[in-house]
Length: 386
Length: 197
Image (cartoon, rainbow over all chains, first blue to last red; front, side):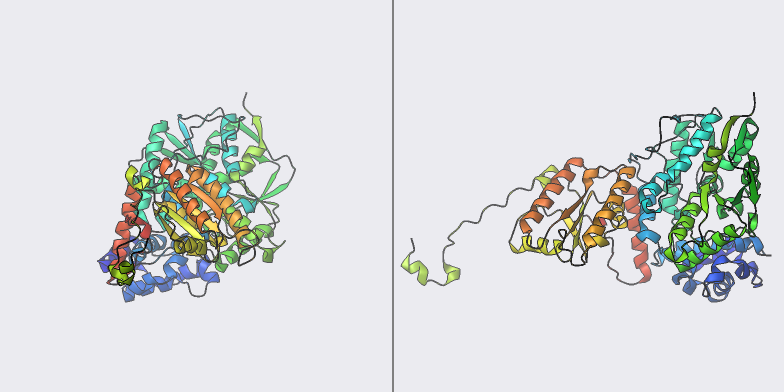
């Protein structure tokens, strides 16, 4: 049964088309820091050895599913998808997800499948911003309230992202629908191979969206955005439009005027894997940043489709290799001469901030990090039209 | 009033002096709802305190499972969340009194971690009465019994945890069954899913 499952996973991902050219390994960020990991090796072992031994090893869990390999592969082998299927099989063979934080994040995600729960996730709402229970546009906050509760030591107010987004929407005359019944989008469970849990979460979220009456969903998290847009339709009937915050601003840009408040503020932008390679949203964040007066935009060496992963995926496998990747990415940001690094995914931001906190990196990685929504909200000067 | 003849008989043949008292009816069992309670007890004080209660033959509410950790400071939010994920209705974290921790400051760490746990429980929408942090020393058997009785009654009043979704628990149980199919007899680590009382 398991051999058949691997074979069908291989077929879906096109694994047999591999030419063993090694371009995947040369571009893989994990392979760069971890000498034991190589996408080419995994594919080769799968083809020749039936792949069972590979399933039981740590290798399937080291992949960041960032898709840099697939981007470079001349045979278009969907390596990240294959790893995902391999993880689902590995779990059935008794492997456990190497969860970070003792599995707290995964527990929170799985707990959100409970139909009768009444979350207290709207404590970040203040009197100066307006939301409603129904509306044309739904703002999908993601797990920000949980990150606030968990990462208190990072002095991170991740719900500031949500606050900023609603503020910007209000300025545009939009009162977004927000639900306290929102569940985790399930991105991490999906990429860890826990399809049944993911399906349960998807079901709850689609019910929630339908209840709100919304036709459009706006997400500030790259992972929520990609999951809702590209993965939910495979599991549920999904007749909704999904926009990343940058796309939403892009649509409404002519109505707004932004100024950074400082002349020549050097800014760089980190493309999250889920936004760039998985979803193809590369120009929109740049056009938003370009519309802000006073911003001097600097591009990192690895940007757009070549953007390097922030180093940790799905709250798993956080180890010294992740730290090396975070350090190298932050150094790259500093090398542009930028004073401010903009991200479009709260998890990338958390991972970077955690790496900055490491005393071994003291000082070398210091750069201001803000989410796109926070920066846009701060730069909002008012209406340009009329 | 001892009968001379009675004393000369072997002990086993003597009439019993005291009448064994009837076991008191358990209100929890009578109510029909048995809460699932998990207690993380530190090895040095709390677990010994529980043992002390046992040695003194104290009768108290039996509807809980103890997980022994070396120190209460080991109990991260992940442990408490895992208990709720697997269907617990209430969780107690118990450790040594301040100044008595075998690892000097472990119980201080327990407080820090418990603060984080409280915040997460709040966002999840669970009643704060479902978790408790207590300090029970090795000699405090009666305190242990009182803690368990009190907490069990409080959780029984709150009812089944809103996060104990039967569907999810069934999915997890099915997965465990499949994992054991490698032909090995493996003791399931997720014992709380087994409803034996």
